Image (cartoon, rainbow, N blue to C red; front, side, top):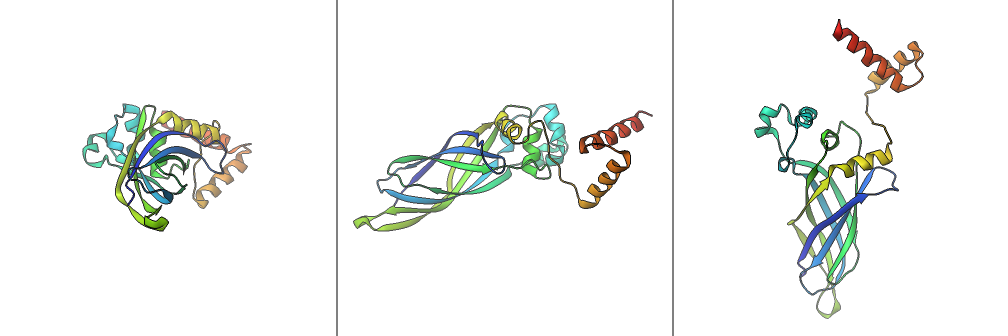
Length: 215
């Protein structure tokens, strides 16, 4: 029965996709001799948040995720990023598969808040694998075996890669989601003030709020 080993050997921005995406290079090695017909691979990707240092600005931005820094001893924890499904092509000894991971700029999503808060360095990631491997058994017969969740891989992704991806898909922009009633109020404010863009409406509200604080 195949004994598979997984390693993430690189990552890059997927330049042409419907939504922001990263492409992880996944090396799959069969430690046994059976030819692999294919692998239906399921992957859980987690952010090992406890495995890196955070400066003061990052700690402030991560308040919504982990709370006050003086309580991080209890609240700083691993975060689920996403799940992916991948069909790995046939191979004998080893292969490198492209594993796309779709991303979001919705800062209501915890993982997006986390990535946005980081200034630099690396994001420690954990990949947990399961699924089904199809292989050639005795007499050339097709056989199947399950992949245990014990199969894991680690990868330290540069923060700049996430930022480059978002700059590629949303140049000099950010994205927020509003409830319909909040959007309707903002829309009415924009129309009443004769403001040409949504950005000018938000800036007007921020300037008014700052002036109120300074009084």
